[in-house]
Image (cartoon, rainbow, N blue to C red; front, side, top):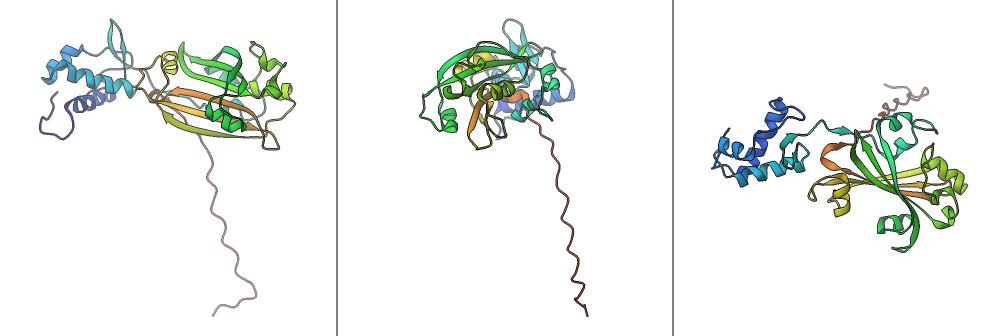
Length: 263
């Protein structure tokens, strides 16, 4: 293990690249502990602070995880989360058993709350308007992988089951359709990357400088009026969002005019 002092790349980035390559080769497998920071510093002939910066970089990238008082470990495999909101509807209008088996959703709170700007914009109401909010946390293998919320207009949700702190034995959209009397017809998903809020970082158990993926899901009725605005936030480095779709075949060439004679 060595670094090139004359290279344009910073020493800690060179070290991070070499450690990443070793993980990829399988020198250290998922869950395996790396040598201590002082030991790695001695291997590369650099200061401990330089190695710490390399480890910090790989933690942000989701490759390593540090357990206080224990050491630095290779994180397990990346979680493949097909959590675009269309997954909540499944391939048919019914309960999506595959998602239910892989993800455990916990209802955190239900009540009135001021709408954040993106939710207010989706509903076409002023920022801070009091809406009905159902907050949730999703876990897989006992690890938090999603924090989110579903928002409804009080005119639709007041006095219905949507305002009660109870979990349903069916998807939320089915409960909302019955409670509001409005049918979900179309939806839009907008995904963006950003830094987490302090609360999101604490709940998802990630560093404050770890990027997250954020989804804004807006579901509409047949008149293109929003029924529900949902938010979901996932740890970016350990999350992949995959969508499979068909590519249309080329359009057939039109037949030549039968009345046209080619010389």
